[in-house]
Image 1 (tube, rainbow, N blue to C red):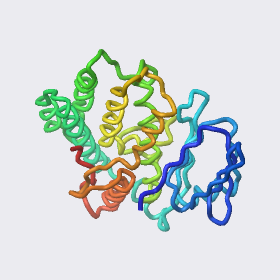
Image 2 (image 1 turned 60 degrees about the vertical axis):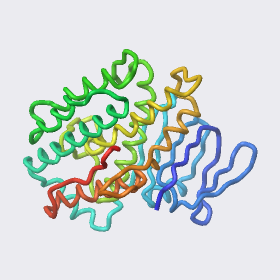
Image 3 (image 1 turned 180 degrees about the vertical axis):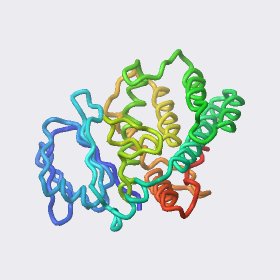
Length: 295
C-alpha cells in the first residue's frame, strides 16, 4: 500500500481522533486522514500545534515526522525506536556484520549508483562511456574512489550551466538538498521497519550523523531526485527559490515510479524491498541488495 506524505506549511492544529489525524486549519475547517495511511508528515511552520497522542500514533504506525527549520529546510526526523517484532535479533545481525560483507555491500551500492547516474545522463544525450567504465571497475569497498570520479563528471555535465554541488551552494543546490532530505527520511523509515538501526552504516561513519545507513542506502536512489530537480528548473518562471509549489513537487518523490526486481513500484514501496534485502544480507540469507534500475 502506498503511504501518504502530508505537508503542513501553514498554521494548523493536529490531533488524534478515533485513529484519524484531525487537521484543523485557521478558518476552523477540519479534515481527517487515517493515521495508518500516512507514511510521512512534514511540519513547516512555527504555528503548527500537534498533540502528544497524534505524535505517538504516527510514530507507532511507522510514519516519519520531519520538522523544518526557519529556512524551511529539514531540521529533525522522528522515527520509532523499533517497529519490527524481532528488532533485537535483527539488530544483532546488523551490529555483527563482517567488514568484508560491508565492503561488498558498498561495492554493490556504488556500482548501481554510477549506473543509474549514467542512465540519467544518457537521457540528456551526454556521453557515458567513462561512467560505464568506472562502474565496471568498482572493487570491494571502492578503494579507488570511483564514486568520486563519477560524481565529478556527473555534476560537471548534468546541467547546461556551470554548477558546483555543495550543501550551501547556489541553486539548484537548495532543491537538491530538500529532495535528498525527503529521500533520506523515506530510507530511514524503511530501515527501521526492516529491523535495522539507521545510525550504523556500512560505509558512512560520522559521530554527528544519526542516519549513516540511510545515507549509504539512498545513494542509488539519488538520480530520482536529480531528475525531479531537472524538470523543476525547466519550469517557466523558475527563479531558484524553494517555493511552496516547488516543495509540493519534491514531496512527490516517495510516490515516484521506479523499476525494481523487474517490476514497477512507487519509490516508497520499492524502498521496502531494498531494506528488506539488506537485512537478509546481514542475516546471511542472500548476498545481493535489491536496488532500482533507473530507466
